[in-house]
Image (cartoon, rainbow, N blue to C red; front, side, top):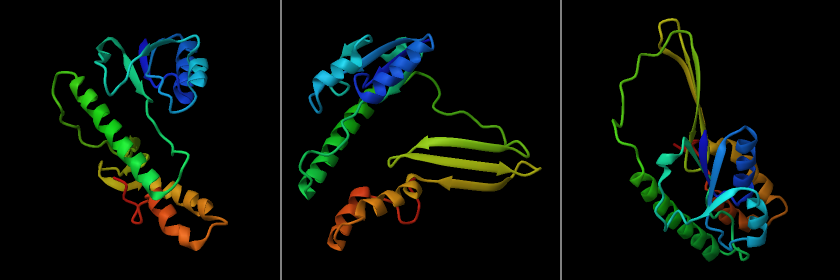
Length: 194
């Protein structure tokens, strides 16, 4: 199969490209080689891969020639300074990139129906689904009874897993830093990251 990997010069993207190629797939990487971190390191990651130097936010992309696309491009992290403005600026950059990415994806949607009718749930079954939410992965687990009705339905959101990270981030810190750290993690108090 032929796959596109965006962000292919990054750490995760380059390793995914290695893995796909070792499984016998054709891989075309896409990366704009920004200087957000050391470009020489990105060049090293990209060595041996076919990489198109394109910017997802600026360039026209046609993903129709691929069997699948792995979107790993992004500009995560914080700047070398860590005040409130730096965090707000990072959010602004994330929003800019997210909107550009969504517009590019909407332009590439395949033709056809947007939805289809579902069959009724099967009896005595377990179903697990992982969905990407805005804070991270959301796990849905459903269990049906003998009549095909939901007997149990559990949702585990990213905040459930990340509260312990906030606790670790606060170790050894002053209590006055808690509000800023708490809002930086932006976790859901009610467990609803949907």
